Image 1 (cartoon, rainbow, N blue to C red):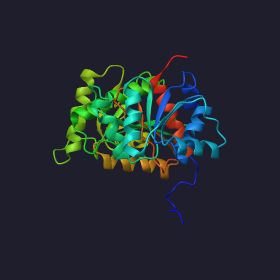
Image 2: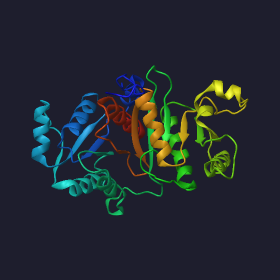
Image 3: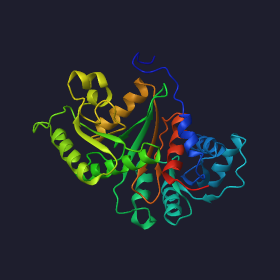
Length: 311
């Protein structure tokens, strides 16, 4: 029996996100260990929606078998036959590093094996940027989405990593059509207090952004009520803050708060979460077995938008 706090709404891929993705040429997506039901179903849905050209990596017999179960003719797509998780992850990453694919996607393999392949310098995906995971959470009633970073990759991101996260969410929001993004730095208070390190770091990050980030408003520290609720903003007399109560993105201090926040918005709020890892040569889709079909489609759409390939 589900908890009464869990939303009964079924997640839906935002149509505007899909429409925006379909305005670009479909990227080639290298799917590491594709021969399993969930990655194949996701690949079929995204391919038929025109936002993915699959590049299958894994045991070729398993890939063809799963496609046959879906009655999907994949004869026109590349299949790279590999054995086991490690070889599949390395091959998929190498294809992206060599420019033979535009997106790297996790299939049926463990996350640590997949990410080890992505960060290996031998595969050519590393850049001078830090890897940052971004969740795009859409509102179930069609309101504006909110981005959350970092909820899945960096456990205790230092100041420099969170600076990269600010840069990445601003860039992604602008690609999504928000000309001047509003970014909030999460803490438990709106005042810098030495006993709450995240609040001191929030002010430091906001001051850094004021000097280094153009065409965006960044504010911190802010508690969650002051990020999400204009009523709370009015009550606490913070209406002069350009971000409070109207944030487009939240930069979290650690993986626990980020992971709890995104899952609350999904499981309690009923939102649809699309996620990708930025900072590599190509966007990385770090999908989960728990992701519903709508979330996998939304993630593919987000990757297509991030690639921005001209038609």
